[in-house]
Length: 136
Image (cartoon, rainbow, N blue to C red; front, side, top):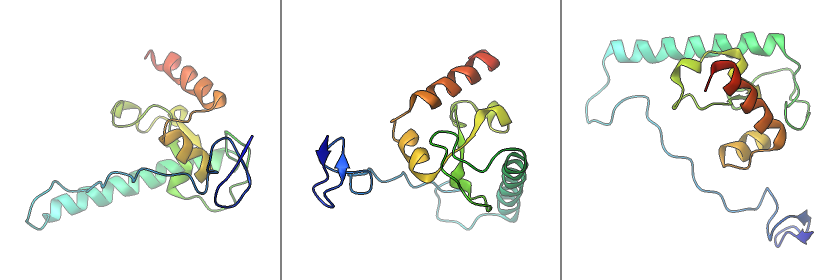
C-alpha cells in the first residue's frame, strides 16, 4: 500500500481519491449550440424533462434504502441527482432511461468512480443482471 503524496493517507497509488488527477466532465448544453435564444417550446420541453426525471428519481428514493448500493454509506434523507446512476448509460440505451431496474443509488465517490471507469464487482454484477433482464 502506498501513501498519498498530498495528505499521506493510505492509497493504492501516489494520490488518494481526494487528490488524484481528474479529467473534467464534458460541458453539456440543454440546447443545441447556436447564437440564438432558445424558443419557449424548447425551454418548456427542458422543464418537462427535468420534472419527469425528478418524479422518477423521487419514486425510486421512496422505495429504496438511503444507502449507497455499492459501499453501504448512509446518504441522508434528502436525495440529490448525483445519487441516481444509470447502470447502462442513457446515452447508449435511451429506452432504459426511465427503467427503475437500470438505476442504482450511489454516494458521490462511488458514482464518480463508476463514471470514470473504476467499476466495482458489485456494480459489475448489477450491470450484468440489467443486461440479462433487458436482453442486451
